[in-house]
Image 1: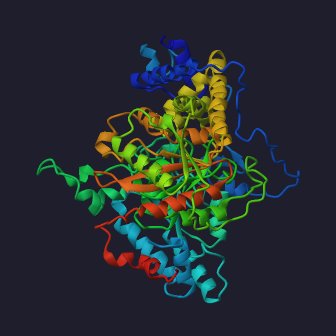
Image 2: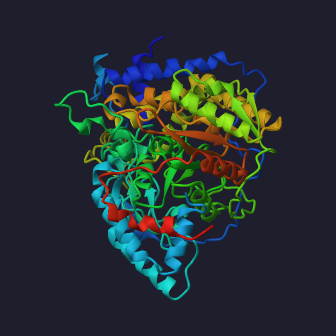
Length: 108
Length: 525
């Protein structure tokens, strides 16, 4: 069962990462095939396990401010900034559709 | 062989003034320079290391040393944040990223006076089992240059470059393992999600400890799989691992997944009587592809325990063969989530693409991540799609519980420690390793180490013997949750029995090893 181009496109948009070439798509196919082996295991009545520490209470500390005031430090690593802001390109613009953007999937 | 830990002996030497912290640091730095071809280090923090060594020396002179680790040179895998020092995760995405803070484990070591020599090489974002897939190139196993390996390797022809014969370190903490194995530091931090500390430890002939999940803080360790990652400890002997563990373990308010129980550092007893010990040999670990050599070493070890009076029984962990499939789904799913933070806005690489945030993020990630990382992100996103969530992600979480329960049953039946091989074979030559892709390799190589991460259990690789090719073969001990003292005690007993040979590195000049003569001449009975 091959993954459709629609799903591949959808994944590229969700992940904001590209398949790049046929090898990339093939890699996903193999990953799915590999994961399908899980269906062989009988998990009736078994609860999913989120964490090996599920029997313990998560630590919650007091709601006191113990650190902060490190704006300068944090901004040091940003490439584009203005005063105390990180600068991003305009938002709310969706990625171009499959036919219009540069992606290996166009050929498929 | 030293009775007590190497770092304990060096510590004694520092205290008695037989060597100074600065001398120690300088020799390690010089050794790093002369073993540059191993490519174990990404960043060498020479200036800061010497400064730390100087401070340590002052403390020793004033009789105010901080503890056993004061003045001891260490290295840290490059996926731990280190303040003021570049942290790259061997990826273009973080090239040039200078951490604004220290990971808790790094801070703890520095607070003990340890001297941070540098950051070690790894597979990009710790994804891989060879330490071959980082942007700074592969790490070479120091044993490739050992007398033991060289005398066993037959050159195929005159024209064959002896250089092309070198073997991998395993991964993903290969740089740390190579650094410890080649004497450039006394201990190194790695990380372990599927075996990334134990695998290279086995191939490089060093001790590799994966602590219980929740024992050591992950704050500052750039995450791969939040529910399985742990910081790993690599040393040349089990005692040293216990010393480092002692300084790292314990609750961290900055990591809510660390348990709140009090942790008391311990010194390992010299176990002499193993008759009360029950060792389990899980039959499923006789996996397809296990070399006959390693099978023999494993058998011999089981016999060793039995002949010494321990109870050795075959046990079963029936879901073992699904562990790697389960890991594959859970790992890629968590990776898909964890890698979402890399968008170029706040830190790391940022593409010049400026049309929109979406296209900037996409371009940044296209430019910053290698094939392996991108592949896992895409797979993870597939398994997390609404139509797949139940059948893949939830299913894998259910299988995880079955795997964890397998261990609970076995330990519940009276078994104290499990004994298994760590890897399927000794280290393969790089040229052979790269013939298969990363995912295939990881799948094959993690098979024996992965289940311990699923169940969150502590596990340790102890070097056991040399293979026919003169390369290290290690064995793995898996213990009960939070029973590191018992695990390490048994590991130490085993280490004493096998007397694993010291690497004979020809490239390393004799006098650079003088600093280690101290451990031989130290008078501890």
